[in-house]
Length: 295
Image (cartoon, rainbow, N blue to C red):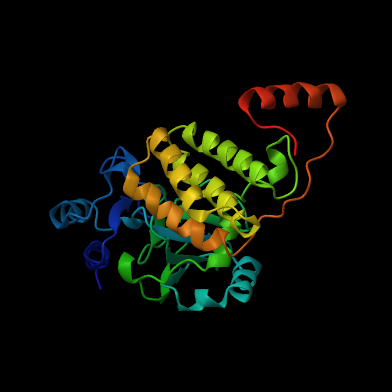
């Protein structure tokens, strides 16, 4: 099969493609001077690129909802496969050094940062932000990429295993991260924590809003087991997310997943560490002015 046939096949499945310099992993500077920003699914564009350079390698830029695990050679892949056997069913290709590119579908509304290094030997690609080299690309030494399990369209990919996704997400903040003038699981403390979480969601800068909402959503729904109303949590978090600039549909999708996971993983309500008397007096005074006091 000629390279262009592979290229057009990727595009038909729903993946943008870009040409790479022959024998290398970087975008062809003459054909795509702006790199992955010019990745395309247009057949005419793809045919023009590979007509100009039939020896070009192939880069795949997976869309926003697709996560590609770029797994190092040997032990990293074996460890990941042992911990998450569901990955055996995912489309994946073998890299020249014996690593794997594993394609998975993210839950609706959930976003990850490509800079996450939560699992040794595993980098995050895809998500509309980072391409991977794909078959039939060959490097200068003759080694190439090959599919072990064929690629399918984004909507047909298996979902990221939940426990794996939780490893890749920022953990919910512990309650002690937000000092409150009351302890335990009292209604006043639950309200104080919820309001603190909402404050941080509302102030999240662009580019961090999905992850911030998800992190504090997991924390808020983790308080449901202690008596916080899930409907109250959703209403408050949604209002904060809208204030941050997130579209309502995206915010609701994030909260739907956060509730499903957060309610199943109650947040430990350990006591906050003791504060110096002078600091505690000042914070209690401020709390009384706002109408929140000791029980």
